[in-house]
Image (cartoon, rainbow, N blue to C red):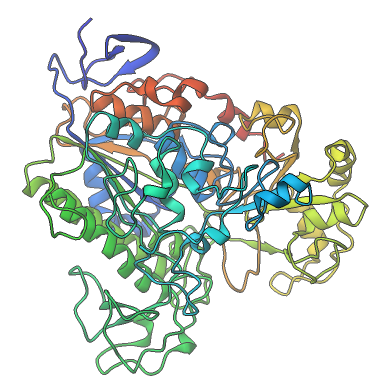
Length: 630
């Protein structure tokens, strides 16, 4: 049977191997394939955001992509919906139970704590079981006493990495249990590129077949990723409005306060205490802005947008056939992409921070979220324009989605207590438990670790036999110990804790959700407690939303697949069938003429490519997700 990609629905034959149940994307009777796939994540972007009335004028370029392609209105990211598992969904084609990555900050029963030596393991003085943190702290530049550098590139801080049973550090990509689309493309001799938000941590995307000791973050050669450049989202930065920004819509030049280079210039009127995180930004930390500028311009969203612009410029260089820095002619990558952060920051920002973020109870986006969406949309326009300018628009498939959503989508929102002692369960102490974890500890159940702690609680018990007792306690919802009054709502936290608790997952229900078996999978939690829509762990004075849970708000994301190369019968099409962002991975390989079945996660999870029909089939995990609010 002849391979047809784009236009008619067929059974797919890839590399002469019949893949049952997989449908090809075709156009007409041609055999044209895409030469490039550009994957874009607008972190936090819900499908519903595309319909917010006062955002319509800020979505011109995203709607342009919709007119050129297919919009999936029922697309879901990973559950739990944190950045790592959400991105690995579409890079591996597999869910967290298969990738082994449940959260950016996770836990392994098999690995040892950072710094553990082989001698300690051999002597039995060190026991397995450790928190695994792959974030900004994994980068060698982070612990420089200045808040980390924006441009990373200094390699790994091995003192922060977990250790295997032989006493060797476990790097991010070694923690991943399956290979990635970059592995497959690289093996086929294709060029790849990627940019994300933590330099060392996101080398996880290179896949588990690569040798991390040979990664060179300075040159961007990271295993199967030919041109890797992730910029640290949590670095101490500020905007200098007296210097031109990188792109036309940038407010000013982004200053890396820790090093002064390479994005540096000096401005005595801007302090070094401004951060590009919506939970940290504080206008009061600014001195008076330079003449001609208003303090209202220097928002967390503005700074994050300037940060995003750095990555957009890298993509524009790559479209032009250059490396990410624009210095060497290397050819446009077959697979490349980036993530945007500004929308996520704008969603988290409270009504009283800066000019106000999030969506109000009437369904209207507040000014800073409008600004974030508008700036991001303008960047999408620059990318689409550059593809057309270089004659690549018809040979490039653009996939726009989100690693995760944000809970809640719109007000009201309630922040829950999240700083209880891990030993006593009392308020304060080390602050490592939420009220969910504290409820168990106060009743004699020892916890090895509570992870998540954004819009879900992932609980690892020291004694797995305590599961049923723990579940009984959780189902009682007796949070009477958390009896202080929430100053933002006037309601006791104990009442809010009970109201927020969703369906408790344990045993077979965790297995049914595709998250593995805690008895055999060292990464799978013993118990998962999702929060319902409208609740998150944290102070509502600092943010209004979070992600990492199981609700529609956490997981129901935007997904648009478009190209001017699509046939007319596909352009502007809307598909309401439930799909998973895991399907992006095999689709990416399929349209490049590569075999999706070479992805280990695709084989294990039986992941199909994205459909072009409108059937009613639903993935089991999506059916389960409907029950999480009970």
